[in-house]
Amino acid sequence: MQEVWRAASLLGGDPQADRAVPPSGFTARLTTFTAAAMAFLAVFALALSLATGRLADRWSEELARSSTLRISAPAGQMDAQIGAALEVLRTTPGIAEARPLPPEETRALLEPWFGPDLPVETLPIPQLIAITEEAGGYDATGLRARLQAEVPGAVLDDHTRWREPLVDAATWLRLLGLVALALILASTAAMITLAAQAALAANEQVIRVLRLVGAQDTYIARAFVRRFTLRALGGAVAGAALAALGIAALPSGEAAGGFLTGLGFRGPGWLWPLVVPPFAAVVAFIATRAAALRTLRAQS
Image (cartoon, rainbow, N blue to C red; front, top):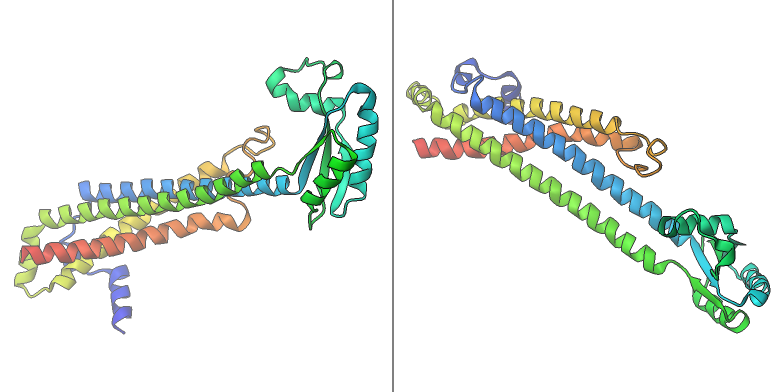
Protein backbone atom coordinates (compact mmCIF):
# COMPACT_ATOMS: atom_id res chain seq x y z
CA MET A 1 0.00 0.00 0.00
CA GLN A 2 2.86 2.34 0.83
CA GLU A 3 4.44 1.74 -2.59
CA VAL A 4 1.12 2.55 -4.30
CA TRP A 5 0.92 5.81 -2.36
CA ARG A 6 4.48 6.72 -3.36
CA ALA A 7 3.71 6.03 -7.02
CA ALA A 8 0.58 8.18 -6.83
CA SER A 9 2.56 10.97 -5.20
CA LEU A 10 5.19 10.77 -7.90
CA LEU A 11 2.60 11.13 -10.67
CA GLY A 12 0.20 13.51 -9.01
CA GLY A 13 2.53 15.52 -6.85
CA ASP A 14 1.80 17.78 -3.92
CA PRO A 15 1.24 21.52 -4.56
CA GLN A 16 2.71 22.53 -1.21
CA ALA A 17 5.88 20.48 -1.60
CA ASP A 18 6.21 21.35 -5.29
CA ARG A 19 6.75 24.99 -4.34
CA ALA A 20 10.20 23.97 -3.05
CA VAL A 21 11.22 22.95 -6.55
CA PRO A 22 11.75 25.64 -9.18
CA PRO A 23 9.39 24.95 -12.12
CA SER A 24 11.83 26.53 -14.57
CA GLY A 25 15.28 28.02 -14.68
CA PHE A 26 18.80 26.71 -15.05
CA THR A 27 18.35 23.39 -13.23
CA ALA A 28 15.19 22.58 -15.19
CA ARG A 29 16.86 23.29 -18.52
CA LEU A 30 20.01 21.42 -17.49
CA THR A 31 18.07 18.32 -16.46
CA THR A 32 15.96 18.25 -19.61
CA PHE A 33 18.89 18.91 -21.94
CA THR A 34 21.11 16.34 -20.23
CA ALA A 35 18.44 13.65 -20.42
CA ALA A 36 17.73 14.45 -24.08
CA ALA A 37 21.40 14.45 -25.09
CA MET A 38 22.21 11.25 -23.21
CA ALA A 39 19.14 9.46 -24.58
CA PHE A 40 20.16 10.54 -28.10
CA LEU A 41 23.66 9.14 -27.58
CA ALA A 42 22.34 5.97 -25.94
CA VAL A 43 20.07 5.15 -28.89
CA PHE A 44 22.92 5.68 -31.35
CA ALA A 45 25.27 3.61 -29.19
CA LEU A 46 22.72 0.79 -29.18
CA ALA A 47 22.17 1.03 -32.93
CA LEU A 48 25.86 1.06 -33.81
CA SER A 49 26.72 -1.70 -31.36
CA LEU A 50 23.97 -4.00 -32.64
CA ALA A 51 24.60 -3.16 -36.29
CA THR A 52 28.37 -3.57 -36.27
CA GLY A 53 28.14 -6.79 -34.31
CA ARG A 54 25.49 -8.08 -36.72
CA LEU A 55 27.61 -7.06 -39.73
CA ALA A 56 30.71 -8.79 -38.37
CA ASP A 57 28.65 -11.91 -37.61
CA ARG A 58 27.27 -11.93 -41.14
CA TRP A 59 30.73 -11.59 -42.68
CA SER A 60 32.06 -14.32 -40.40
CA GLU A 61 29.17 -16.64 -41.30
CA GLU A 62 29.73 -16.06 -45.02
CA LEU A 63 33.44 -16.79 -44.68
CA ALA A 64 32.68 -19.90 -42.61
CA ARG A 65 30.58 -21.35 -45.45
CA SER A 66 33.17 -20.70 -48.17
CA SER A 67 36.74 -21.63 -49.00
CA THR A 68 39.17 -20.91 -51.81
CA LEU A 69 41.51 -23.26 -53.63
CA ARG A 70 44.49 -21.63 -55.33
CA ILE A 71 46.27 -23.55 -58.11
CA SER A 72 49.69 -22.51 -59.39
CA ALA A 73 51.07 -24.50 -62.33
CA PRO A 74 52.76 -23.96 -65.73
CA ALA A 75 50.39 -22.97 -68.54
CA GLY A 76 50.58 -26.40 -70.14
CA GLN A 77 49.58 -28.16 -66.93
CA MET A 78 46.96 -25.74 -65.62
CA ASP A 79 43.92 -27.40 -67.22
CA ALA A 80 44.95 -30.85 -65.95
CA GLN A 81 45.54 -29.51 -62.43
CA ILE A 82 42.14 -27.77 -62.43
CA GLY A 83 40.36 -30.92 -63.60
CA ALA A 84 42.08 -33.04 -60.95
CA ALA A 85 41.26 -30.51 -58.23
CA LEU A 86 37.60 -30.34 -59.26
CA GLU A 87 37.39 -34.14 -59.17
CA VAL A 88 38.87 -34.22 -55.66
CA LEU A 89 36.45 -31.54 -54.50
CA ARG A 90 33.47 -33.24 -56.13
CA THR A 91 34.15 -36.45 -54.19
CA THR A 92 34.83 -34.72 -50.85
CA PRO A 93 31.95 -35.02 -48.34
CA GLY A 94 30.69 -31.67 -47.06
CA ILE A 95 31.36 -29.64 -50.23
CA ALA A 96 28.22 -28.43 -51.95
CA GLU A 97 29.79 -26.70 -54.95
CA ALA A 98 33.19 -25.95 -56.47
CA ARG A 99 33.68 -23.74 -59.52
CA PRO A 100 36.71 -22.08 -61.14
CA LEU A 101 36.56 -18.30 -61.15
CA PRO A 102 36.44 -16.89 -64.69
CA PRO A 103 38.88 -14.10 -65.68
CA GLU A 104 36.17 -11.46 -65.19
CA GLU A 105 35.69 -12.34 -61.51
CA THR A 106 39.45 -12.57 -60.96
CA ARG A 107 39.86 -9.13 -62.49
CA ALA A 108 37.10 -7.76 -60.22
CA LEU A 109 38.91 -9.16 -57.16
CA LEU A 110 42.20 -7.53 -58.17
CA GLU A 111 40.74 -4.26 -59.43
CA PRO A 112 40.85 -2.39 -56.06
CA TRP A 113 44.64 -2.89 -55.96
CA PHE A 114 45.72 -2.86 -59.62
CA GLY A 115 42.98 -0.90 -61.41
CA PRO A 116 40.38 -1.95 -64.00
CA ASP A 117 42.80 -2.48 -66.92
CA LEU A 118 44.76 -5.39 -65.46
CA PRO A 119 45.50 -7.93 -68.28
CA VAL A 120 44.55 -11.04 -66.32
CA GLU A 121 44.82 -13.35 -69.32
CA THR A 122 48.47 -12.49 -69.98
CA LEU A 123 49.74 -12.61 -66.40
CA PRO A 124 50.82 -15.74 -64.47
CA ILE A 125 47.99 -15.37 -61.96
CA PRO A 126 46.99 -18.53 -60.03
CA GLN A 127 43.63 -20.05 -60.85
CA LEU A 128 41.10 -19.67 -58.05
CA ILE A 129 38.36 -22.20 -57.33
CA ALA A 130 35.49 -21.01 -55.13
CA ILE A 131 34.24 -23.68 -52.72
CA THR A 132 30.81 -23.57 -51.08
CA GLU A 133 30.42 -25.79 -48.04
CA GLU A 134 27.39 -27.69 -46.81
CA ALA A 135 25.94 -26.97 -43.37
CA GLY A 136 28.17 -29.51 -41.62
CA GLY A 137 31.36 -28.39 -43.37
CA TYR A 138 34.16 -30.66 -44.52
CA ASP A 139 37.38 -32.15 -43.19
CA ALA A 140 39.98 -29.51 -44.14
CA THR A 141 42.93 -31.61 -42.92
CA GLY A 142 41.89 -34.63 -44.96
CA LEU A 143 41.23 -32.48 -48.04
CA ARG A 144 44.67 -30.90 -47.81
CA ALA A 145 46.25 -34.37 -47.65
CA ARG A 146 44.37 -35.49 -50.78
CA LEU A 147 45.25 -32.32 -52.66
CA GLN A 148 48.92 -32.62 -51.73
CA ALA A 149 48.96 -36.14 -53.19
CA GLU A 150 46.87 -35.54 -56.32
CA VAL A 151 47.22 -31.80 -57.07
CA PRO A 152 50.65 -30.66 -55.83
CA GLY A 153 50.14 -27.09 -57.03
CA ALA A 154 46.94 -26.53 -55.03
CA VAL A 155 46.73 -24.51 -51.78
CA LEU A 156 43.52 -24.59 -49.72
CA ASP A 157 42.42 -21.48 -47.81
CA ASP A 158 39.46 -22.18 -45.49
CA HIS A 159 39.32 -18.48 -44.42
CA THR A 160 40.09 -19.27 -40.77
CA ARG A 161 42.63 -16.45 -40.52
CA TRP A 162 40.00 -14.01 -41.82
CA ARG A 163 37.07 -15.37 -39.79
CA GLU A 164 38.61 -15.38 -36.31
CA PRO A 165 39.46 -11.63 -36.26
CA LEU A 166 35.89 -10.84 -37.31
CA VAL A 167 34.47 -12.95 -34.48
CA ASP A 168 36.80 -11.19 -32.03
CA ALA A 169 35.81 -7.82 -33.47
CA ALA A 170 32.10 -8.60 -33.02
CA THR A 171 32.69 -9.54 -29.37
CA TRP A 172 34.69 -6.38 -28.67
CA LEU A 173 32.16 -4.16 -30.45
CA ARG A 174 29.33 -5.47 -28.29
CA LEU A 175 31.46 -5.01 -25.17
CA LEU A 176 32.39 -1.45 -26.15
CA GLY A 177 28.72 -0.71 -26.78
CA LEU A 178 27.85 -1.84 -23.25
CA VAL A 179 30.71 0.23 -21.81
CA ALA A 180 29.50 3.29 -23.75
CA LEU A 181 25.97 2.82 -22.41
CA ALA A 182 27.28 2.46 -18.86
CA LEU A 183 29.27 5.70 -19.23
CA ILE A 184 26.22 7.50 -20.64
CA LEU A 185 24.08 6.37 -17.69
CA ALA A 186 26.78 7.38 -15.20
CA SER A 187 27.11 10.82 -16.83
CA THR A 188 23.33 11.25 -16.75
CA ALA A 189 23.19 10.38 -13.06
CA ALA A 190 26.06 12.76 -12.27
CA MET A 191 24.53 15.72 -14.13
CA ILE A 192 21.07 15.21 -12.64
CA THR A 193 22.61 14.89 -9.18
CA LEU A 194 24.37 18.24 -9.63
CA ALA A 195 21.17 19.86 -10.88
CA ALA A 196 19.19 18.52 -7.92
CA GLN A 197 21.80 19.70 -5.43
CA ALA A 198 21.81 23.16 -7.03
CA ALA A 199 18.01 23.35 -6.82
CA LEU A 200 18.05 22.27 -3.17
CA ALA A 201 20.70 24.86 -2.31
CA ALA A 202 18.81 27.62 -4.14
CA ASN A 203 15.59 26.83 -2.26
CA GLU A 204 17.08 26.40 1.22
CA GLN A 205 14.87 29.13 2.70
CA VAL A 206 11.68 27.54 1.35
CA ILE A 207 12.80 24.18 2.72
CA ARG A 208 13.34 25.71 6.18
CA VAL A 209 9.79 27.09 6.14
CA LEU A 210 8.41 23.69 5.18
CA ARG A 211 10.31 22.13 8.06
CA LEU A 212 8.93 24.72 10.47
CA VAL A 213 5.38 23.68 9.59
CA GLY A 214 6.26 20.02 10.19
CA ALA A 215 7.34 18.70 6.78
CA GLN A 216 9.67 15.70 6.92
CA ASP A 217 12.74 15.37 4.72
CA THR A 218 11.19 12.45 2.84
CA TYR A 219 8.14 14.62 2.05
CA ILE A 220 10.33 17.42 0.65
CA ALA A 221 12.62 15.00 -1.19
CA ARG A 222 9.60 13.38 -2.86
CA ALA A 223 8.76 16.69 -4.56
CA PHE A 224 12.29 17.00 -5.98
CA VAL A 225 12.30 13.38 -7.08
CA ARG A 226 8.97 13.78 -8.88
CA ARG A 227 9.90 17.02 -10.66
CA PHE A 228 13.36 15.91 -11.77
CA THR A 229 12.19 12.43 -12.79
CA LEU A 230 9.47 13.88 -15.02
CA ARG A 231 11.93 16.37 -16.51
CA ALA A 232 14.38 13.59 -17.28
CA LEU A 233 11.63 11.44 -18.77
CA GLY A 234 10.44 14.25 -21.05
CA GLY A 235 13.96 15.08 -22.20
CA ALA A 236 14.78 11.42 -22.80
CA VAL A 237 11.64 10.93 -24.89
CA ALA A 238 12.64 13.86 -27.10
CA GLY A 239 16.25 12.70 -27.43
CA ALA A 240 15.33 9.09 -28.18
CA ALA A 241 12.74 10.20 -30.76
CA LEU A 242 15.27 12.42 -32.55
CA ALA A 243 17.84 9.61 -32.58
CA ALA A 244 15.30 7.10 -33.93
CA LEU A 245 14.32 9.54 -36.69
CA GLY A 246 17.97 10.07 -37.57
CA ILE A 247 18.60 6.33 -37.78
CA ALA A 248 15.45 5.80 -39.86
CA ALA A 249 16.66 8.52 -42.27
CA LEU A 250 19.92 6.68 -43.00
CA PRO A 251 20.11 5.57 -46.64
CA SER A 252 19.52 1.92 -47.35
CA GLY A 253 22.38 -0.44 -48.07
CA GLU A 254 21.44 -0.56 -51.75
CA ALA A 255 21.46 3.22 -52.07
CA ALA A 256 24.85 3.43 -50.36
CA GLY A 257 26.45 0.76 -52.48
CA GLY A 258 26.26 -1.85 -49.72
CA PHE A 259 28.46 0.06 -47.25
CA LEU A 260 25.60 0.83 -44.87
CA THR A 261 24.02 -2.60 -45.13
CA GLY A 262 22.96 -3.72 -41.66
CA LEU A 263 23.28 -0.34 -39.93
CA GLY A 264 20.43 0.81 -37.72
CA PHE A 265 17.74 -1.31 -36.08
CA ARG A 266 15.93 -4.23 -37.66
CA GLY A 267 12.53 -5.71 -36.89
CA PRO A 268 11.96 -6.01 -33.12
CA GLY A 269 15.21 -4.08 -32.62
CA TRP A 270 13.19 -0.88 -33.09
CA LEU A 271 11.78 -1.49 -29.61
CA TRP A 272 15.14 -0.57 -28.09
CA PRO A 273 14.62 3.22 -28.42
CA LEU A 274 11.40 2.80 -26.42
CA VAL A 275 13.38 1.32 -23.52
CA VAL A 276 15.74 4.29 -23.21
CA PRO A 277 13.33 6.95 -21.77
CA PRO A 278 11.98 4.76 -18.92
CA PHE A 279 15.52 3.70 -18.11
CA ALA A 280 16.60 7.36 -18.01
CA ALA A 281 13.69 8.11 -15.69
CA VAL A 282 14.74 5.30 -13.35
CA VAL A 283 18.31 6.66 -13.29
CA ALA A 284 16.98 10.16 -12.58
CA PHE A 285 14.72 8.83 -9.79
CA ILE A 286 17.57 7.03 -8.04
CA ALA A 287 20.09 9.86 -8.48
CA THR A 288 17.69 12.61 -7.40
CA ARG A 289 16.42 10.72 -4.35
CA ALA A 290 19.95 9.98 -3.14
CA ALA A 291 21.08 13.58 -3.74
CA ALA A 292 17.99 15.09 -2.14
CA LEU A 293 18.14 13.02 1.04
CA ARG A 294 21.90 13.58 1.37
CA THR A 295 21.62 17.35 0.87
CA LEU A 296 18.64 17.68 3.21
CA ARG A 297 20.49 15.84 5.96
CA ALA A 298 23.44 18.21 5.46
CA GLN A 299 21.13 21.23 5.75
CA SER A 300 19.59 20.02 9.01
